[in-house]
Image 1 (cartoon, rainbow, N blue to C red):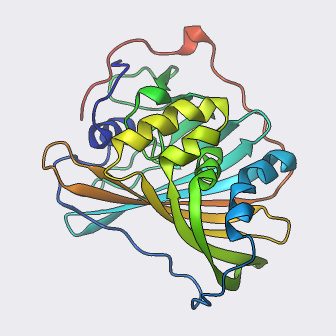
Image 2 (cartoon, one colour):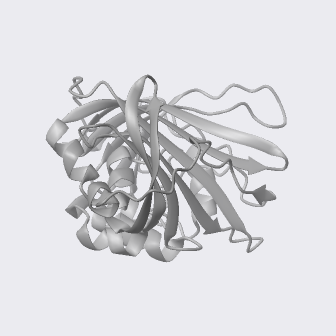
Length: 279
């Protein structure tokens, strides 16, 4: 396979096989949160900076993800479901792709393994044997794998909050029955990269250069223990062919803290080393 992918739009399409780089793309949905309270907390920025470390102390959780973009008047949503080990920075997601916009073809779910600096995908299709994994070095992706795999790595999403400069406390609400505090702000990817864990430094540095802007608007929902329950982030990158900005909204839900999250990475013999066919 090609180890480096120069354009985020092309990488995203190659990884999930469903989004077309040359399509006309518009922005995605907003936060849909409770009415804004505008009262800042005494340490909103500090609370958000500590969110990733809080997850590490928790150890593990279950996770659900969604990634949305609008193309050609159609909203495309890619969903993921799995577990994440915050101690080992390892995750496993089953990523479900939407039907083809032009027909009723069903895509087989893709199994994704998330690891420091790497993304492994199975059932990738397009010439990859069914028993083989595709490995991508996330530091070589111009988006740092924040959108390429159709799901944002939950720990990378949390570490982006290390790049928050200003944040506003919106108010109290609930996420799936759990009381949470809602924060809204903008994170700087480059700033986040400076204090990120070793496995995320390289990918975040790449994303800071590869996106249309290093600023990432977000809505974060933290419970009373400072754990992220919901995190919605909005990314923008330049479509290489049309030179337009593509907007992608990534949402991560974390729950079931302490759930078993054993993730075993594939052996080198099980990794596909051929070329992935373009769709």
